[in-house]
Image (cartoon, rainbow, N blue to C red):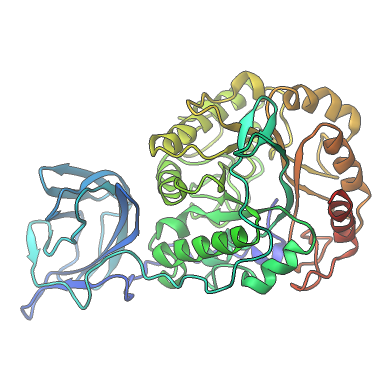
Length: 497
């Protein structure tokens, strides 16, 4: 689902921000005519890898093309990167500009990032070279280590630990083999607030707000995310990006789990300029709206980082991509489904696509075995060829994700019986978003009844205080007061409990 219109103002294109925060100690030349300044930070770290970021500021003459080099003092090895072409020989790391970001004016800056492995220790590099010219000097106050987090101090909630879900046939089961369903809500905000420059979430995500969600007998919350904010790209305000963004998401996940609630981390807004049919922000490549498919430049790196962050917590569920719509870019349904699975150069889509198979592969390559949700096409409303094109998963832990609103094409019991029932008979079936724009609940009442009869899961859109006709929104305040629409979901969930 898209955010309501008041939340979709685009960012000004082309602005590059310097990530000058406490997380990025600056390494500068000691002389009076330093050629560059580099801010280096570790924005996330796990047992065998980490995510790093550099912000390069040009203090000399304008640069037409740039090459940044530095030496790792330890065993670190770069595996992939963005905003540059990254390579490593021995301990020397080299990043060369892309075709679109080679120029740096005097006083200008740019940011780039990478994923790397490490063992033993992860010390920061202490010297950087721009086009062969050294920016010498030592690190600033404090070595770049794990991002300082502010761990939640909330007491554990009453719900106990959430289950470690996995697919078993067409059911979800917990670690004891008991059948489970994910029943709950979406908590929108993490996909747009950061890139629009005013925060990380839209409204509170503190313990009191989580208790209000739990009071509806919710056992699952889906958390939409923004890949550019997670990766800390330079046009996002640093206070809402990189380590700060990741830490906020981790804290929200911890609070949900303290109340026995399953967190679903989901990729909602992504990079890539799209000018084809059904475009939502054709004038920018930034992650400021829904795109038809994930992109090959950033999305695999996003899921590698997310999977590394949560792979040791099997209670966290991964939802690969909000609402694919490659079918709007081509009239050939087989071409749309092939694009969905395999990615690459897809008909009608301006950027190189990352298909669902590449994202499953990126997640599993980290060792993460978490449950993964894979959506359909047509904004996740069309599941007709999901079984035929579904990606291979060495962990055997995939579920099908469907979205439904009263204004969708497949919005009747006859369509559900024809198109959805065959999928739900073979794999776990999750309606990641259900909703309607009527400020009532007649449609979702029918949806929930059908899903209940098929043992499927469902999550209402959305736990936000928007106008229910444009959101649609389940609540009128964060104490959990339902809208006329939200009454239907609340009462149904309480009735099931």
